[in-house]
Image (cartoon, one colour):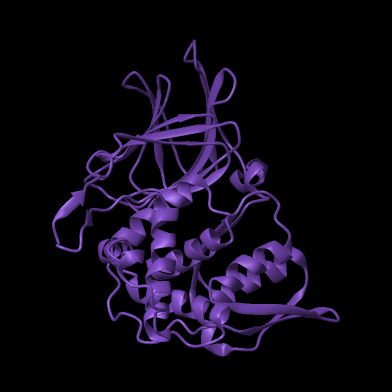
Length: 338
């Protein structure tokens, strides 16, 4: 699951389409050293294309700190003779990897050829607060997800796994992982919504807080006074000032029109992603390489992206290509996920 996410983010980085939130996420995945093999293969593929020859003897293990050391400990004045092809390519290998690392703003310890530290920059301390604004699909540390609407703000703190609390201004749709030991709490001013595991929408624009439940059960409070307990297809509207409220039954999905234009691929197979696109854009899409059918896709498209834009990103995650043939789109090539 995270492997597919890393490939997707790496592809967006190369295309310079990463959002600030995605950039932070890719930084975390990169320095975890979980995906060195993928990064190594990607760099080799890029260099082979650019240099028109295979990369010779790429390193077996890719360590971010060692990459920077290799680059900076090679002194240009050490030799006036041209580097052999293999050594040049080895240098290009490290340079390409370092460009990815440094391009994401990661600062690592650097050592001199004598292995003594010559400079040291420690990374900034872990942020105490995480804030998201405007329309965005957010993965929370506990596995829950949030679709944040435009002109909205969501904040949580770095002790989130032990104390699942969110502060919301505006509107968001939540899909919460069940955890009986850690209730999920959303604060919208004085109004508090508590859940264990469910899917629901909160709209705190204007002078009301409106909670709409699509799955599970939530409890809505104001200063420890329970205003209502909601089940699926129920909604409560609470006046922020007077605390007057009204609870009613509705068709939840029909009332949440704001999220209808968003396309969320939350850890689904490549085949399921294509079926979503066929249904949404009313077109036929064929995958020729069956080896990528079960590869996982995690992506979100929130701004009315075109079919071509979406296919470019999800096909790029597997390094596949697509073309139009009359009334059908055909996807070819691509790396298998196993």
